[in-house]
Amino acid sequence: HDVLFDRSVPFGEDHIFNLHYCRHANRIVVCKNLVYRYRLGGLASSVKYYPDKCRLSLALLEAYCEFCGGRDNVPDAFWKKAVRDGFVGSVTHYLVHCKMNEAAQKTRESLAFYAPYLNEDTVNVDNYSSKLARYVLKADVKQILRQIYREQFASIAKKKMKKLYYKFFTKRI
Image (cartoon, rainbow, N blue to C red; front, side, top):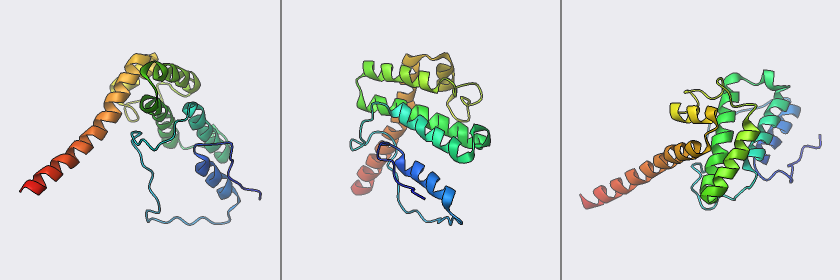
């Protein structure tokens, strides 16, 4: 069936491969055991910088649409989460890897790319915090960056603080 990894896609190529592979499968078996784990959070220094991360994320959305036979066939809840994760993931990626001016420019580009998908329906409180939803709908780059920084990095810092707190007090007692 000529299903191969697309070497020109540096990000998400495994998802695209799986979609193409599933199209030709007679049967798919799902394993409930954890086989591998992605490191999420965007703060890992080992994460490679992708200058066009928003385009790569949109390529994944397009692959899902193609697999499902068009956007209308993609389940709504999945679509909203994919749009949110693609946009917020791109901005978080730029915050981690770029200086603030470049991150702001990349966020403007991401807003332009995601503009057809960012609307009242996809940007709601279920998928975004109420503040972030407001800023995204207004396309307020400065506030988007500030809010994503607060939400993404604060939660990671909290987890790290909990670990340190636990280590400190369990060893002292």
